[in-house]
Amino acid sequence: MKAPRVTLDQWRTLQAVVDNGGFAQAADVLHRSQSSVSYTVARMQEQLGVPLLRIDGRKAVLTEAGDVLLRRSRQLVKQASQLEDLAHHMEQGWEAEVRLVVDAAYPSARLVRALTAFMPQSRGCRVRLREEVLSGVEEVLKEGVADLAISAYNIPGFLGSEMSPVEFIAVAHPEHPLHRLQRELNFQDLETQMQVVIRDSGRHQPRDMGWLGAEQRWTVGSLATAATFVGSGLGFAWLPRHMIERELGDGLLKPLPLDKGGSRKPVFFLYASKDKALGPATQILTDLIQRFDAAPLDAVLGSRASPA
Image (cartoon, rainbow, N blue to C red; front, side, top):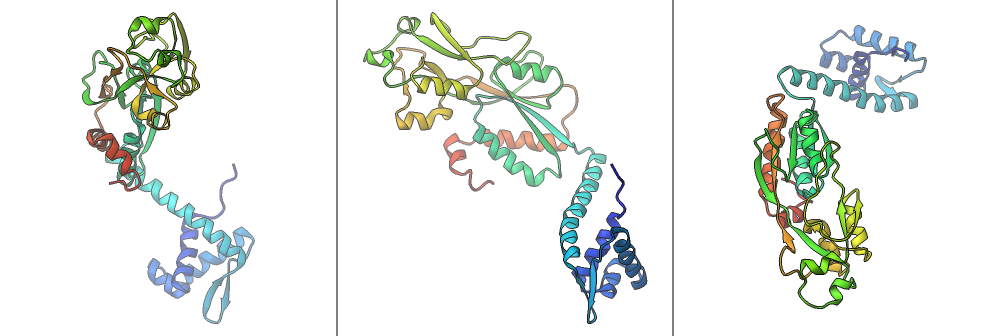
């Protein structure tokens, strides 16, 4: 890649001339001599090979090319300033990135609220969000490639902070044979029907979760796919209530009237990496995740448009 011929200082000088109405005014703002400012801009035009300014009376006015280049340069200078700020924050222990791995069943609305509140406090820190299923979260955390993890498992060797439970309910299409029985169901009724289950994303020791007594099972890669299959009449499944509220309201899915086990509420936990101490950005994000996890989910959904 060819090295740029024009420096950031030259772009800043041009911006000062335009924003302050002339070379003399820019010199005062930049605490430089007027001749230095004039030379910087003249040299800049020579290096670029296009005129950037023209003199209109006593005022320096942008040419058409200068107007285009100046607009682009403002973003360049802003990004350079942000980069310098980030380096300063990193020197003080501020992280460049927080890596968060989350079980796909955890309500995304709560994460959206937490991340929205984190943005103005992030000081340029990025968030790398990764979704896994079941033991996949545990593997990522143990491999040391996550700073924070949200899982419904008790992960051996880690102390997790208890979070809110997530309700899973057994559902099927309203016209499914199980609903046609028009009575309370038991597990013997389920055994002859097809169950849709979600594949564990863990590679080393994948686990099955929940009741798996049906003679026929279809395994899919995501909760969204499972909801689509079940909503189309293909089997039954236990799905997170928060993910299927619309389908339940529209009558595309209907809870199975089981005599027991129709609703499950596994508790989720927030874990932190043991490989390093929490930095300031990670701690802020941790606090925000816990704050919005504690809020009722309907309140989180209702206030999404006005983040705190």
